[in-house]
Length: 124
Image 1: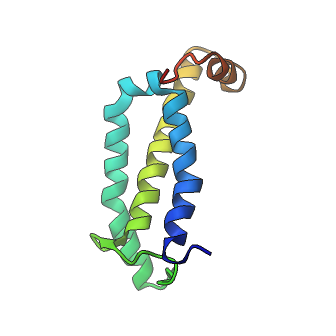
Image 2: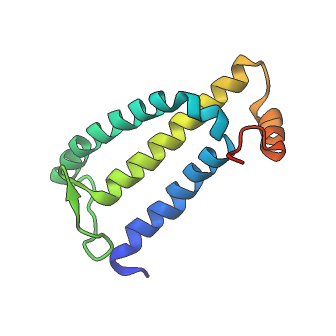
Image 3: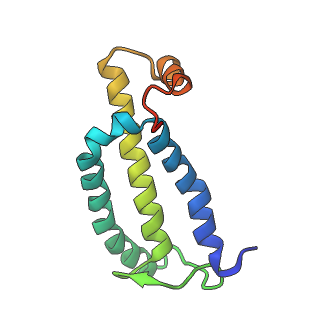
């Protein structure tokens, strides 16, 4: 549908939007933990080229050249690096958020939504 931009657009919509929402809605909670988030993200970005090269050489999966930008960085498609970047930020952020509520003895489902509505940790 989007030609060479299909994987890129899918990544930005399905991984970028949730990650952006975590960052926007829990900014004040996540910013003190930025070093941890960056370490986790860096670890995954180092591991993804190894995993990508191995999987592609074993034909575990294939990328369509018609739907990809065809740009490689360290042996991995740029779309794979982008999704790894976004998902690792989202998962590490979610883990930090869950730990915060667990440490407080609060339910993330009840208190988390209240805090989102109140804007307790938001950027604004």
